[in-house]
Structure formats: C-alpha cells, structure tokens
Amino acid sequence: MQVGLISSAGTEAASPLSAILVFSDVGARGADFDAFDAAAHGRLSAIADEEKFTADSAKTLLVHTSDGVCKRVLLVGGGKAADLTASELRKLGALAVEEAQRRRLKVANVIVPKLLIGTDPVAAVRYAAEGAYLGSYRYTEYLTVDVEPWTVETINVVAPGIESPAVQAVLQRAAKATAAVAFARDIVNRPPVDLTPKDMAKAAIEIAEAEGLECIILKKEEIKAQNMNLLLAVNAGSDEPPRLIHLTYRPQGATASTPQIALVGKGLTYDAGGYNLKPTGALEDMKIDMAGGAAVLGCMKAIRAYAPNVIVHGIVPSTENLVSGSAMKPGDIYRSKNGKTVEIMNTDAEGRLILADALAYAVELGVNKIVDLATLTGACMVALGPHQAGLFSNDDAWRDEVLAAADKAGEDFWAMPLSKKLRGMLKSPIADLKNIGERWGGAITAALFLQEFVGKTTWCHLDIAGPASNDKPEPGLPKGGTGFGVLTLLELVAAAGS
Image 1 (tube, rainbow, N blue to C red):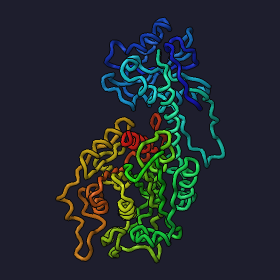
Image 2: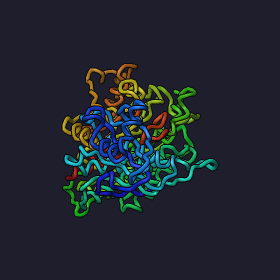
Image 3: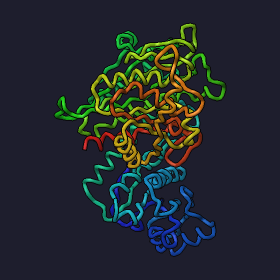
Image 4: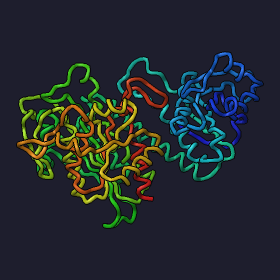
C-alpha cells in the first residue's frame, strides 16, 4: 500500500470512500462535514441526526451518498477541535484504511481538516499518512488459513492547496518511520522459539547491512570479557547464549567532537521469571519483554530517513530468563560491568540487571546522553495504566527534550520522580545494591537502580511496560506488539541533531 497527496478540495477528489473528522465544538460539526453534506444534498446531516452520531473520539458512521464524486463518506469522531492531537489524525487515517479494507476497496481518501490547513498543514499530512500506514498493519506470518487478502492499494491524503517538496519529503519519511514501527511490531509478536537472542542479533545485522550502519555483536565470551556479569547471570538459566547488539549511525563528516547519543533497549526475548517463576496467566505474553530492544532496532532501521547530525548508538542486551540448575538464585551476588556488586533478591527483576551492564557499556563509549527503554515494571502500569509510559531522568532539560519529541511523535509519556527517599530500599548489608526494593514505588526504585550505572552522564529511562502491547485492537494499534517508542526515538535524535 502507498500513500499519496491530493491538493484539490475534498469534495472534488473522486474516491469510492472519503474519511473526514467531525467535531463537537466547531459550528454544527465542522467545515469539512458541512462541505460534504452540501455536496450530498444534506444526506450526511440527515443520517447523522437519525443515528444520533456523536463526535466522540474514533466513533464512526459510514454514509452512502447517492451522487457526487464520493460514493461513501466515513464520519470519524474527533472530539473537540480545540483538543485536536496527532493521535486523532492518526486514527482518521487508520480508520479510513480499515473501512476501505472491509469494503474491499482499492482506493480511499483521507481529508485533512480545514482548520489545520492554515496552521501546520505539513504536520497534519504527516500524521494522517502515518495513521494510514499504521492502520494497514497485519501480523500474518504464522497464519495458513483464512488469511484475508489485502485489497487497498492507495490512500490519498487530501490537503487543498498544499503542494511542496517539503510535503513529499514528509510522506517519504512517514513511510520509512511506520515501516520501522511495523518491524518492531513484527519481532515483538514473533514467538520466542523463533526470536532468540541470536535471531535478534541477526535482525540487527540485516538492518546494519541495509542501512549502512556499523555493527558489533558481542557473543558470550566477549560479553564475559567485558565483565557484563549481570547479563551473564540472567542468561545462566538458558541454553540460548546471550548477545550484546551495538549498531552505530554516524552522520557524514562526523568527528571526535560530534555529539553522541546512546539508545539502550531491553532485549529479553522470553522472561519466565527465573526461580521467582511467573504464575500461569503471566507467562503467556512474556515474549513481549524485548519491546524496548525492538524500539531501538526499529529506530536504527529508519534513522537515515531523519539524517540526524549526531552519532547514534543503538545498544540491545539480549537474553532469555529461564529456570535450570545453573540459573541465578535469590541470594546470589554478582559484580556488574562498572564494578558495583548486586545482591539478587528477586530473579524476576532481571531487566534492570541486563540494562545496568548495557548502560555502563554506553557510558564507556563516551556518549553525551542516554535514553533507555524497557518493559520494566508492572508498577508503572499500576501508576499510569496501560496506555502511558513513565519517564525518569537525572536532567530536567533532557527530560523536557524527550517529552517534546514524544509529543511530536504522538506517543504518551508522563514524567515521574526519582525520589531520593526511596533509594534506601536498594541497600544491602552484604553488597552495594539489591536488585529490587519494597513493594511501594516499584517503578521508581527500578529507575533508581538503573541510575547507579550511568554515573554523571545525562540519562532518561522510559518504562514502556503498558503501551508496548495491546490487549485489544484500537485504530492504528493492533492487538499485540505496538512498536511504541520508535517514533519518539526518531523525533528525539532528529531534534538533537538540528
């Protein structure tokens, strides 16, 4: 499927289906609704009134029109125009694709709201295009029967009067970015039997070859030589050897003084919890525990489309966390890469262990700033729910940059505190640190643990346990892996290099 641009008025752009946003606080229902209603001789308003259609977010109503250039108009609730966000435009594009596929149509139009044409039309086109691409995502790798054939060939984003090379460049970037999100979704959805640390490393090598990136893959002996004993401890219960993935993007003309950013993603390809074994009901989805690593690899897959003027390191520590006679045990003590000793109090608090060694590795590279992403704690979901990620940082300015990138990307984060009062929960009488605190403030103590391994380097930790996967489908967000974080990382590195 491809996304194109039409610069004529929506009512003049022929299509078997046109999707428009309808608002609850602009006139009756908005200028686009009024224009299409007039072209359909009042049919839209008549049907909408009869069906008591509201403009609540993502509510839809399909109206068949008897004449005009558009045979069907899909009304999509956008809520209040004053609260219009990138998310609503993405939903518009996604719902248009889904309806077109349901109707077995080859083409559909997505109408950019007129109220945005005079403010930020380029961004509006981008979000609608991203929504269309994201809405077309399907994971069918393991289906052999009843696989619905894909029929939609083209989605046209209709933005009257908007014709410029900048818009075409934005469409190309949207295609590349959403393909990276789809890649992240694919590997999160893949079963753990087919996505071991070796498979994750193989995917990284393929990205490096395709995108012209530097690639280092550390195997078990090399990880041991790096003194990454926490990563090795988590891996000890598995027959699958660990990997440390390190991709590097260097802009043209980069020198020793070019700023460097490290993106570090948790790559637990399966997490049984170790001797603190997860119960039935919590084991089935633990293939998603590498979603942070998937986001980092997804970002590196699309990074050349954003061409940041910074050196970007994509680092993914990857292993399984299983149970065997050689698995780490509660009470064990291991020395981390940066020399700090850690007493294992809970083997299911393993993500912070592999991240700790990876963060220390990033610090040794001499990077200026670090962002790590991880499906780290259920506590973050308790605090923020399933759709919002927690953000922790040791630097307010860096925190604000990450939040600004997330806002532009249309992904939802909430800044959380690094409460020093909780640091005492991590004290051990026989080691430098325990790997888990008490029950309360679990997301915060996990972040405080990670902070011990970044030293004075500017750092931000993103706990994406909630939004990394969906229990049920939403517009543009399928059930399963969501690829959350890819778009934020791309926006962040692009802004850092501007």
